[in-house]
Length: 122
Figure 1 (tube, one colour):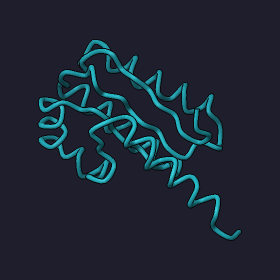
Figure 2: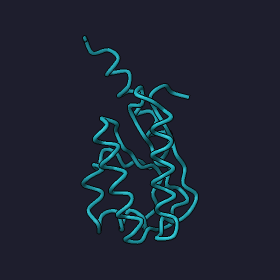
Figure 3: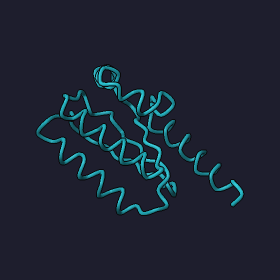
């Protein structure tokens, strides 16, 4: 466990019937993590695809997370999900640098970011 980093694995496609649960669950996890949270990593390995309702909910979550000063990243998104992220312009909102091939790579980057913030003079 790395302080300041939260990993959430969603084991389903993000579709109209589960999009509200997805959004609610992330909001709860972030609230429980508290103010020390610096990075949120969505492990999307099992998110085979996403519909427009799922995309709208994901966009809302990304905005809320970013508004709190927390970095939002996605790891292990497969091709169909990546295509949809691009199509609905979420890749740009997340940032190419916050899309990772593996959870390990996302965690390493988040960990370095947390260390860099800790080293900054107050």
